[in-house]
Length: 203
Length: 240
Image (tube, rainbow over all chains, first blue to last red):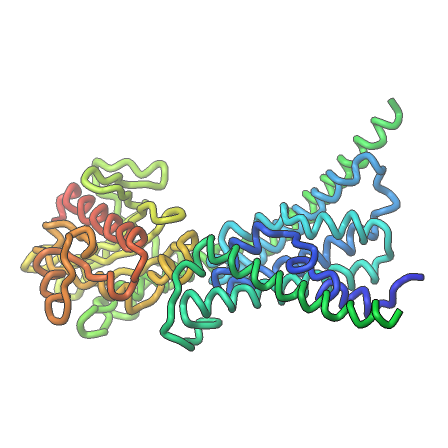
């Protein structure tokens, strides 16, 4: 039986969270989460690309021959990323400057191609949109959480709001990204295992 | 054969549609992009043309450029420099370059102000800094700087160069300090504190940043290289 629309939307946020559960899109996750603000900007830009590419791929899914579906999806995704890049450059210049190279790199974020292949190419337009939106919001929430943890531990602030004088610089450097991501992934998986145990016991 | 043709044509149609859509979006955002870039540059020019000591504009407010055409009137190309590739000067004493064009403004008292953008490599990429140099009876001094490009620097470390409090450590610098070359305190091997911060900057060109940018030396060093490149360019142009 097909999942309800609400479940399609919330799957990406909790049950199939792309970062902590599916462990996808690690490159932008590790690179852009040096602060909560960067994580939010990157997450929202990715959400926009995910939702729009899912809609488009779902619309054209019956016209694209199987053999060229991957290059076609990449052309569609790259076009949306270029569009977002240009729009951010023109209308939110400061954030565009901060995120720099990471915006064009959304093209190679495997979450987007993964959802196109696994969901949008097999489902209707509205459900694909909800899937893209849910996955994007899950990705954004994860980046903001990871960025907040790293910014707080590394710089004593969250969203540039000063909270503490304790600064562990390693947390905003690459090793800190791996440490924080590992800790958070372990925590969320522990919660998932803990929740699934009573259900299994009930069966 | 027919199948190959079909897949080829399908892919071609997709790319043509993508190119058309992108060209439409580009046409729409072309102007906002140009405005955003120009706006950032004009804002920086206004900031560096503000007297670092009094907080007042060095030239009359109505003379500060507000459009691309107004800005073009202040472009300055000294003789003997090739600016065809967007770079008007590459420094020989430090690893810095000067972007083309440079700008020249004239104060009411007739003294000249030179504004240029210096480029040097930071931790992750180019760091661009705009600086205004003012000519006076005691030679040419640095009035103010504004770091324009630092997007590849590490947030929380090198990217702290964006903070106004950090940038203020670099200016003003008197002619005497510029002659010795701008250096960050770590490179100079000293750690001035209190009144010495200002004295060593003016006398020796030593900029103290180790207390406000702990753990990041490469980015402020890039700013120092940029300033030295502009200073050297002005010297070669016969201004200093």
